[in-house]
Length: 168
Image (cartoon, rainbow, N blue to C red; front, side, top):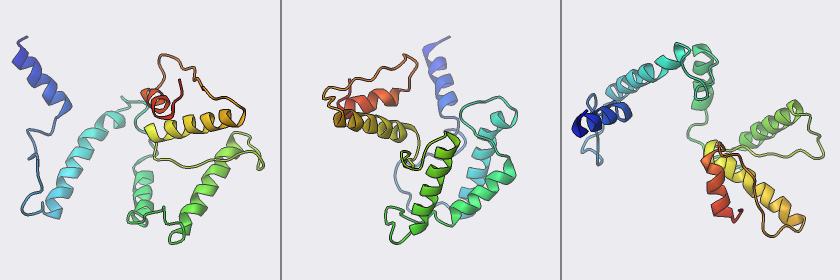
């Protein structure tokens, strides 16, 4: 296979929409009409959900069904504008976080006295927070040069967290 053909195949695999939709490299003079944008998003969602709907994917989609997704979208819509860092303005965020942490603790047999938690956005942020907590707990116990033992199959974000936080 020629290099040009292989490059084109890879581009099509990783950037499947490059031939279907315009790529905006700067803000357009006029915005994309809302109905056009929603139609594009519907097409992309349908294409991307196809594998999961055929049961051909694991680990990326946590499927509760289309009705459940619609319900989640309705719930999200009510707070999509909110900056929950301002807990005085959005105290519901504190309520929801506390309940989720408490429910998770109960599932894991935690105790009210010793279980704590925080919600994160997932991925790297979650792993960075976990390494931070372990580093800080180690400092409380006199560990000044912390090391983390991880399988070679561990998530790369754990390495990133170690680099950022000075954990070998």
